[in-house]
Length: 257
Image (cartoon, rainbow, N blue to C red; front, side):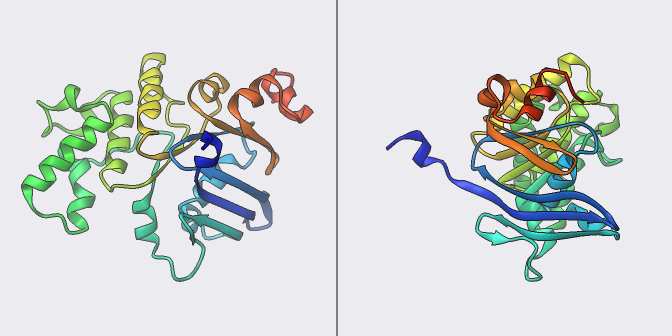
């Protein structure tokens, strides 16, 4: 059996439109995202890539003026159905934002807080979860002797990896990363990229990035957005070397955006 036939779609959007009041921010987006892969969303500011990302775990529900049309199927379930429990959805589809936003708590409590809230009360279980989440986020060795210190004592890059560990602690299958390295220095950015490459074996990752080199380095598929539309989506190597659409080529080559 070829590798191609073994790939499994875990997210499917069908004619998705997103509006903020009268503004049509995302227009008729249909795409498939494969399980245990990294998919990069690229495009100029305001092109709709972050808006679509936030639609994948209904984060846009927090914006009163926002409405979403079309279907978004995650692991076989239309997440826009009234039957879907949003808290449960966000456990399955975790999200990490552009700027690190650790809780004003200890490093340990940043990881343990949500699992404890959802019913995990055994200290040994919590200790194991904290350690495994920090291990997966490549942060354990740096913080294992200071778990009771404030999360705010960490560097910016460490705080971002802590936020990834916090999302992992909820045992999601999908991680949405909204420009997770845009505020970081080159060394911290490299660590985030290395982490993403490691995590894709266990999670499906969708990342919004303005850094074209980053998209080229870490993703299998890349989707290029422009003015709310999906212009082109394909294997990353093809998008960056021989895109089919002239607008994609202009953006990749720096002639636009």
